[in-house]
Structures are given as structure tokens and as C-alpha cells.
Length: 250
Image 1: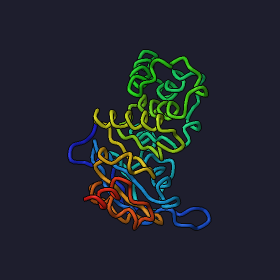
Image 2: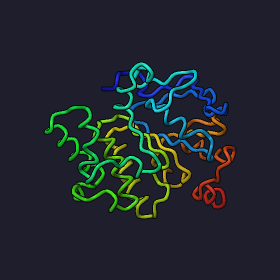
Image 3: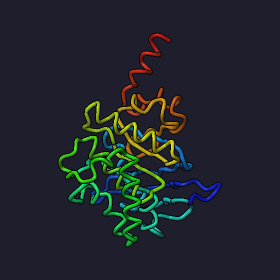
Image 4: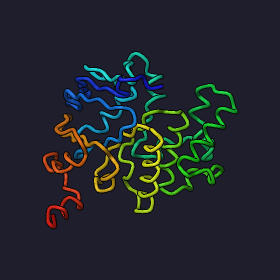
């Protein structure tokens, strides 16, 4: 349940330093309301993945705080990981089951839920990503887009309210990218909070409401997607094709 008037995700003065002394996250703060679709963009090494790993406690900050629905991640990591599901760029790293069904069931089973509840969650999650007809398929036989959707299903089966996706379109062909984008949009329409990183800003234009730009571990722009998209070059990114065309033809 999302508490009224409390951001579903709040990051306050977050700092993280790697073992070699490199500053990975530098005084990052923002709030995200339930149901938002937020894109985080920046060049390689800008801190996106490091930031994402703090959102459900895979990394802990050296200073600052991350709160999920009002509760600090450090105070209750298990709760944070149930509410905030992270889909890694390498979908294969999240596959643990012998079949598609088994893979999605892994999380709920580890919550010690009754078999009937596990089955309900698995069927619901597979249906949400359009993989219900492949429940008996071995995961290694899936396409890249299907594997990414399987990883999303595993998060949905945990009934996570926030979906964090790290470069969900990376290494996918056009068909796979469209499959994943379609499912993300559908999940947003059902009320899920979506946070994703991508280099392909053209794909999320018209769908995401907010864009956060990162560089050198810091946020340099945060606002409405249609406003911040025109500032992407200051983060070392290329202006999306659609914006360039608009600039040329008005």
C-alpha cells in the first residue's frame, strides 16, 4: 500500500564511494511519486547503475538515505526489495529456473507463500508480460526480448510497486525492443511506478513524464521530459532524432 502524500521513493543527499576511492554517487537527491514514469539518462560511468542498486539495498550509501514509501531502505532491506524490483541489463544473470514458470515462481516461493498463491502470482505475472504461452519453455531458448520480459515477470510476481529497469533495450533487436517497451507502457497504465535508464531516448519520448540527467555521479537536470530532453547534450548525450527534426523543420 502506498501511503498518501508520501513519495513512493525519496533519495536524500546520497553519496557512495567505491573501494578504490572513486566517488560513484555525489550528493544525489530526488523524490518520485507513485505511478510516475521516470527516465534516468547519462553517459557510461555517470552513476545510473550505482544509483539503481541503492534503491532496493543492493548497495548501501556512505552517507545520505533512500526511503521507500517513507521507510529507510537501511532499516528494512527485505521490505525495500519486495517493493522495489530491479531488472538488470544482463537478463541472463537473473534467470534461475529450469522453466519459465519455475523462474518466475522462485521469488514468491522464497517468501514462503502457499502454493496456490505462488501459482496465482506466476500466472498473473506471465500474463502481464505476454509469456503465459511459454510457461514450460526452458529460459535459455527464449529470445533476448523474451528473456528481458521474463526478468520483469519475476519482479512482478513479487508484487513490487516500483520497477527499476537498467538499460532494458540494450542488445535487443527492433522487435525485442518493441516487445519490452509495449509491456513497460502497459505496466505504467496499470499504476506501476517505472524508473528506467536508457541511451535510446527516442523510444521513451511520448511515454515518460520525467527525465533525470546524470553526469559524474550527480544529477545535472531533472524535470518534465519534453523540457529536459533539449538539454541532453550538456550530459554528453546526442539529441534524439525527433528533437533534431523538430529543430530543423519547426
